[in-house]
Length: 39
Image (cartoon, rainbow, N blue to C red):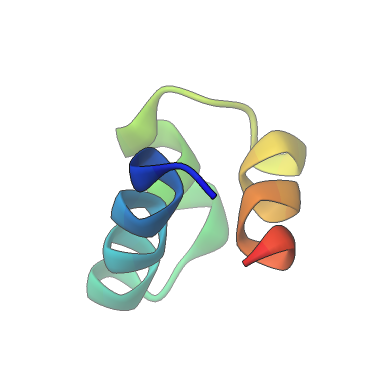
């Protein structure tokens, strides 16, 4: 697991939106979803 994936999770918790979190983290939404799923 990478620390950026935990940062992704924090972003998701703050925004409560996969698409908005992905935008803020500068990744595509499908890639963001895969990162969260892998946690």
